Image (spheres, rainbow, N blue to C red):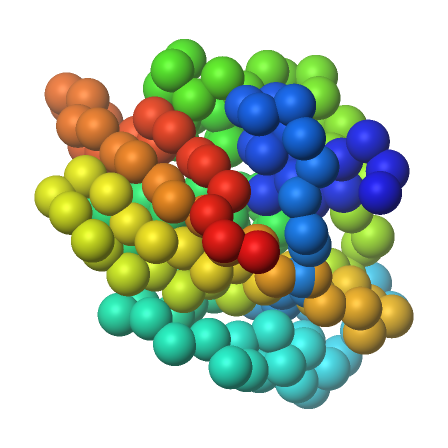
Length: 167
């Protein structure tokens, strides 16, 4: 695996020093990538979400009001907005993410990569997450994670920890 190809991989490497299994996801970009049609983006999104079962399955922009919302916002910032700055605004320093490796991981993603995220809350501040990353060439990478959040006034929830779970 290259240094880091996806956010999930970036987080796994930055927090545990080990690489992780990957699976394609397909986020719905606000505008289709250059050279694609809206229909192909919808099909890619459906393929990315295929097989995900969780309390919430989304490719949406999210928010910071709920645990599922902040996780969706984080993945949207990574896969759709492709902004390390926005990703970092959704995390606390505790999460251990650094701008340069995060920006490099986002840049390394092929243009047109989509995602889908399934979020199941298991405690007040913890969720099991199944993230799918779907590359334009059809390769799919799945990431299973446990994500913790914390409230930060006045902004709402932020992600404090992301760890790999299962295989």
